[in-house]
Image 1 (cartoon, one colour):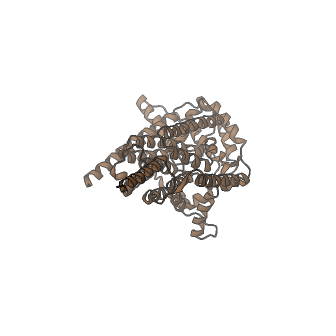
Image 2 (image 1 turned 90 degrees about the vertical axis):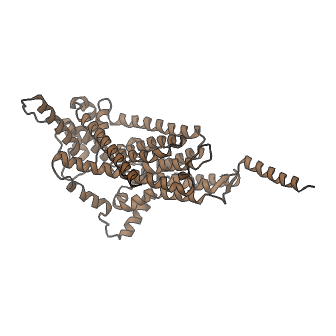
Length: 473
């Protein structure tokens, strides 16, 4: 047992090291894209963003429709300054020039610098335009995150500006979502498909592609969900932990603390639900009944290991490359996100308030009259299904299964509790992590209320008829 554990840890370390190397190289390669190749579209993007406020509510007075041009500006700002020119030195050997250029590009992506003022203000978006127009050098660091998305955005700016990238993201995310729903329906997992549509609708998924800050976690979530569904379809349950380990790594690489738990909760819920269905997929004993707690625990731990290890690897790698302790750039922000200024509130009120503020951003509660109409429509549909559609309360509901759904659904809530400062102030996007909680509630409801199948009625009649025939002399 100990030997197997050590082997698994060694394998995970090798996977993490290899993937970190590959992803770091990808960022360095993006830094080698010539500045002139992205200059035109960066100028267009800077002009588009300069016309926007730091935050913008697409629908007035609806907080869940808020997007963050300021956060998108930071990503573009970092991406643009990956390509800051390297000071020219004369070297006797070409090899020395090569190593110097690579080390400077590597330092650039580790620092993740951008152009701004000492204190971030509402003028920061306009300052980005100034830096692009006048080709000013970066003067502030954003070291604590990987900012892997900045490398992708720099590459896309060879061909597109920010508005066109929003359109591309919308089309790509919609295509992946349709692919996922199609796979579920094709394999007769209609319940999972409907529940997923409901959960994403309640977190206003339609606003996600038009903000870079929101996009990456949902891209990873849908991609991981497709792989999770395929894994469950083929009963390859042993690969689940590796899937979530890689998912945690990619999430930490692309995202900077928005809705990261959605990449764990949604794929895991789909996998567990599919594994418990009697549709011809033979789940092994460790996935059945209480044994599946092992799979859930291993998946959650694997995801957390991947997520945290990737973040820590950035700080270690940055310290090694920059020859400077990176932790002072990180620790203050960690303390702020965990605690922060409670503004006179007790920590309990602060924490509970963070949860409540996120819940109020869900579709029924944040859309005014339309929200109440949607909520009434949902309740009406449920009542009709129960009274007319043949839904009956399932007295033999699998309580173990519902407990599993409940535990996975609580993952976003735990995140709000741990990072309550961040969840309080950034509810306009952190609330979307509740997609996992809503999906879990849908699965619990589906377990509690089930439609009586015709074959069950037929079998009952046959059994009753058989007993009558046997009772006759």
